Length: 477
Image (tube, rainbow, N blue to C red; front, side, top):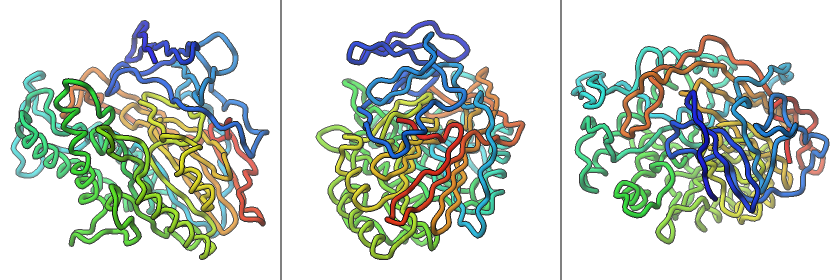
């Protein structure tokens, strides 16, 4: 793959991506964490159970002159005028009587947001700006209250977050402010990363608790330092690759354990690299949630795939669910598996092997109904092998916060994508351990609008039939 940066402006840059001799034009923010990384790779499955619903959603366009988006190898090319905030509203989905409801919001927040001056904390000055180093301000707190107040208004406490809660580039100090201590050696980097985790994870949890929301988080790449994990001569990238187990422990200790140290969830793999980060829990009589950890350190790199122990555990969980006749089995994991998927300001990590992988085959054979994925900061529904994959989520700090509201009964599933239309100000930056901090202010003046709906029903043979879909939640091939 070759990246050729074209003209840049207003925080965005064009990139020409060559794949198999085909040029795709895509737009990405110039201020993303790892440069312009514009497309999702991997082949798309040719099968679908909803052939009538393959037209692009309203507002979907390509920067190329053609009227339809270019697609190649499971990718949907993006244009700068094809942002979530420009998509038209659609009518709301029907409200199901006596339904269990939950909200899913992958990549919330995808940023380190906390008051570094609170309580008795020592304050530090950013040498570059001359200001006190802090990772929040009044604009952020107001915006977070606005979004989380609405999320909590739907009669549910349960919030699923399929990875990338944090920015997570810990163990470095690009500004030299020294907030979390020195980072010259690996031992110092690890201590600094531990201190950062002890600040940012609790701040994230406390915000949800303030709005009476109960999180069910999954591990994303940013929880283990953000990809990539290999770059010759880069001491910090080598450090985070070698310390993936420690980063996973930071996540598990802060979010998946009770105050007494016991695990929040009993049903977990007994061994392997995901023994503390994968779990299964019955959210409701009609819904089983299985959260996977799709990252394995192997052969000197980090790969987007589950290890054998986690796969074996998952197969056992699915067998039990089938015997118990659970109406809806939902799996959440950070990386999309099926394609094509839309993307926005994303490194477009996808699961290794995609729908040919042992994980996908196990989910299809085991009766998984829905796979919830994040990473791509946009929304796409794919239907493959009886599984409805919903790749969704967004970047709060870019004014594009969104969430999916789900309703379930024993036989029906209804999804509704809520999109906020916020504003951001990059004239200043929040302080973070990485030089690529978030914009200094973000504002959400209005309630969200619904930009897509999906209605599905359980069939007599145990399958899933997508009966209706609108807007951005129309399944694509």
